[in-house]
Image 1 (cartoon, helix red, strand yellow):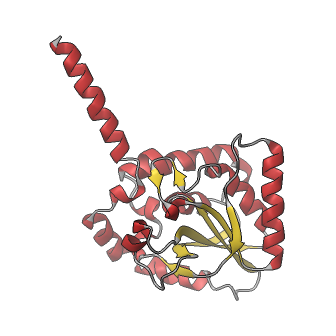
Image 2 (cartoon, helix red, strand yellow):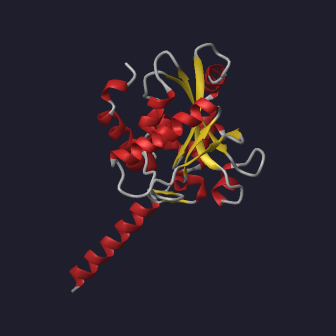
Image 3 (tube, helix red, strand yellow):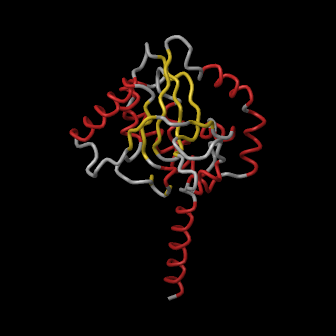
Length: 233
């Protein structure tokens, strides 16, 4: 009987551990934010230079698909992507904080802004990756990350992106890639605000973070297996 109770206790404890360590917001610590602040100034300068949409031969795409740490980590490895920035889009408050976005009050989505070289990769190819690295059939949720900030979305910036986005969605629906109904919203980009500096390159700078190990890392490995021919050399 005692052994059975011990086994039951261990099972409950393990379940709670996994639940806690698979939620995006549960892994921000004072140390991780401070450490990042001291090492990312140079990266931020490079990102600001590269994310300028006026650079010849580059365009930007804004996508939402759960925790932005995951999308950031995946697209960093995609050939043709020159810069990525985590941010907040299509909400109701100017310059929201992470805490405000997580509360759901501001209605922003966690997004990444991708700057890419149009001579190496197309908007359509970016979306082909997008549909496979998150579940577009779960409303306001990715795994244990629940809330409107984790919704699936494509936020187009011109007519060409709008046409490609809707065509891409229809192609995925016809392919049978996902069994459920796709709930991804495809709407104009109404606003965009850069997220706090400690969110940028989070996976790279916090490889031992448990969320990065169990969630982000798994998505990166899946991407690397399914898109071997599109990885950066």
